Length: 334
Image (cartoon, rainbow, N blue to C red; front, side):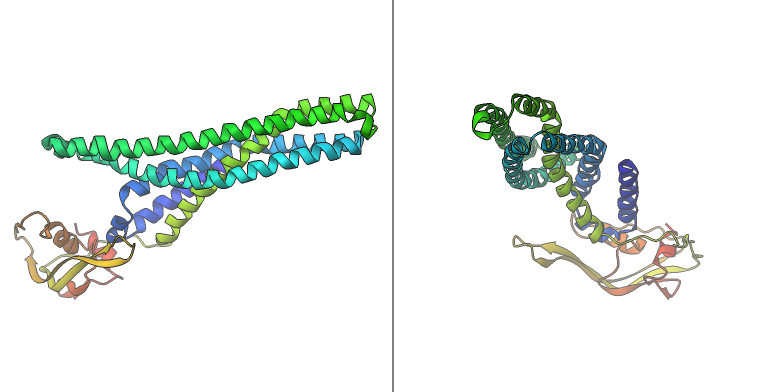
């Protein structure tokens, strides 16, 4: 069931990405999308794969406690107090693990970005030695080292808490043995309680290990949910777009387009603006668009193709304005 849910989630996210307007998709940054599609969904998938084991371990712990209650209510109370202390420590550890994991995931987005830089921008980096050194030695290495440092701290905390939990476990055994005369436990009850504790130790550890795994899955699901909420929903009833006939011209009339940027405070601001411009492309005409880097050539082409919606002005196809209702058909011309 878990794997079917994951497969549905992957299909849904992919469909939403395909349905998202190009300019909105570009604002999400490809490296973040890939980190969610590959990393976060895989984390949730791993948790669903191990969930049955966690459930069996939890059931074993509960059944063992019920048997211990039947064997000796006093021993049951001592063991429950011990288990409660260990569980509270694990829940406290979960809070710090959640914070560490959130920062790890944010840094992994940066690392994913640098991976794309060294693969997709390999040509440019080989042409510029200083930039190549900066990407490798500063950006990529810095992100990798930061992730390692965060995980080292998290692992150190994990092993400290794990050692404390082990100490509490064996301290409980010692308490059962040392307080036998005071509690009035019989030899059979004490030996039975100790055997139950030793038997349940493995399932108890696996049950507690589900807590950090659940935290990781929770953080990943939140990231997936944030992405799906930001992307448009899809409908299976969408009609298949059909390219209209093209007889005469495609015209841009007083068209301008403004990129949305984000400042250091995270506030949306206006970025580069192309236009306003007016242009007519006639059927059969060969047209060259030239200009310096960053002058807006690609933006102009995306406006012509209908993958960008003009901030002002309009695109006309054979004299008919291209609107949100017919733009999907219009795009099929290209």
